[in-house]
Image 1 (tube, rainbow, N blue to C red):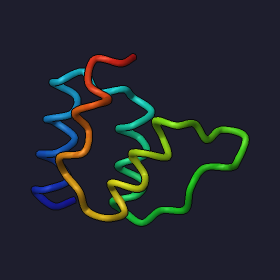
Image 2 (image 1 turned 45 degrees about the vertical axis):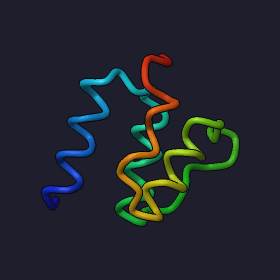
Image 3 (image 1 turned 135 degrees about the horizontal axis):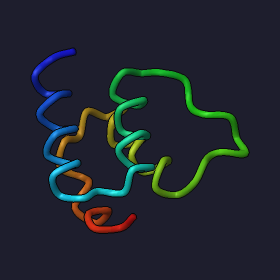
Length: 66
């Protein structure tokens, strides 16, 4: 993995970002396929979209939401 990936995941974990958002972001950033439809949720979708676009600062609204 590259430094951006590691630093962003670390930053999100330290800020207590919703785990579904973090997982979605990681999958999107790596351009992995999305989860199967029945396991999708709002946090995962938001993270996936941000990760796909390479955004590293879109997680603020998901911080502190378990």
